Image 1 (cartoon, rainbow, N blue to C red):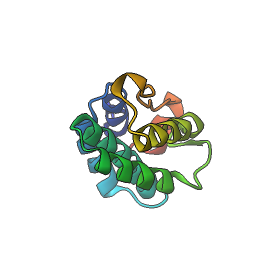
Image 2 (cartoon, rainbow, N blue to C red):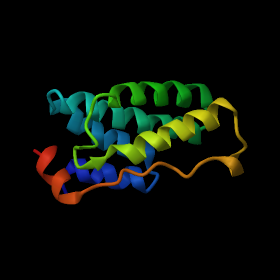
Image 3 (tube, rainbow, N blue to C red):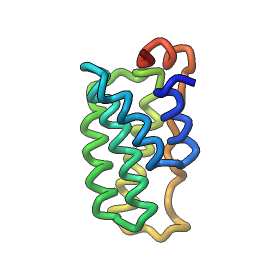
Image 4 (tube, one colour):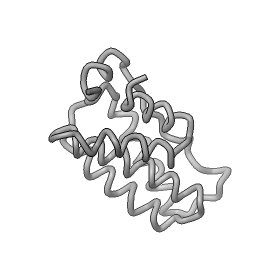
Length: 124
C-alpha cells in the first residue's frame, strides 16, 4: 500500500498518532499545493490525538489551523472529498468549544476517498 493511502487508512481507523507519522513522511517530500494540503491532514490527525489525550486546547488550536489550511482547495483534492471533512471539522470545533461531554460529541471525521483519484494524486 502506498504511504499516502496507508496514512488515510490509519486516520480512518482512529490511529491518529500513527497516521500523523505516516503522512508526515509523505509531506516531507511533497511540493505545493500538496504540501499545505498534507499539512492540514497531519494537523487534523494531531488534533484528534490531542483530544484522545485530554488536551482540548491543543485539539482546538490544531483543528483551526487544519481548517485554515484546507481553505481554497477544490471539493476533491488528493482524492479526498473535502465537503464532508470540512463539515466534520466545523462540528468538532463547536463541540470542543462548548466542552461537550464525551457522549455528545460528533462522530470522528473520516477521510472519504475516491481511491483512483488518491492513487493518482499524491503517491510518489
